[in-house]
Length: 376
Image (cartoon, rainbow, N blue to C red):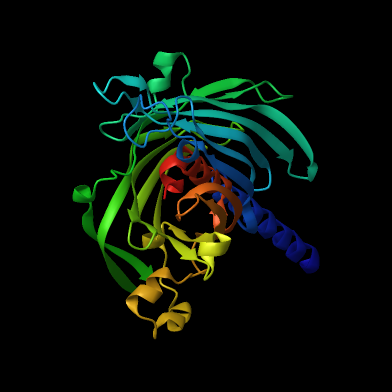
């Protein structure tokens, strides 16, 4: 009898623990640690740099009428979503004499969306498109995310009804302010980050911010990836080619719970020793999610004790939720210079303790900023 009673107690406790754990996890998204969480290739053709106006109609150095930069890609995100297609960008064109505008700057999106079966990644379904137009304000550098509606081409994710998933269309919103391209607008800034149990900082003399102002990322490709609002900055350091941020804020609702993710850190530009001849360079990612909320890892901190603040700032700490890895470029330069005419780009980014929502949100933001991010 005593044995039976003990077994009943043990089973009861086990069931209670299972129920408690399930209750704890309900509404929370699981994290994943995965190599190649954003992977694939992109080919960039900078026709606005190679097809220049030969008529003398437009201001000096203008591209030819109709010339566009093209970003063609096929990229997998978190293994189960695929983005393939192209983004094109055309510049403003003004006549030389009276500066009449003959062509307005804009981005155009034409991206196919697909999902893969998590239990069999060979099974793929095309589910919709990411399409639309984003006008670019020549004066302010603002990417008017909602401006495509005036052209009957709002930037949106449009998903078809597939099996049990209903169809939906969700629009992007807000603004992205591109790089200023004016030296007198650059500012000095100090960036801080947590390394182990101490804070290190670096000061950059001239940074050019790419700003996100209530930028709204449409939901999708699957319905579980929520609509997200983004605010903050990703700053470009002209002297090093690095991108830095002291906080990009992503706000969204997941399973009825309001969530805010704060992304901090760096995307470091590293050139190959023979870049002038082979065109190679890469962005090395060291972005962290919610690092201020993480408990200091004193054991890992010891590895950074002897580093300078700058070296420690760029060092990877896998004890924290982060995105690492690289985006590698192989550029072909315009004859006689070091400005790329085209680029072959390979994505190999890794996730450490990140949710799929965090990964997809970051990827969408990266694509929206594709112009400023790939400018030289």
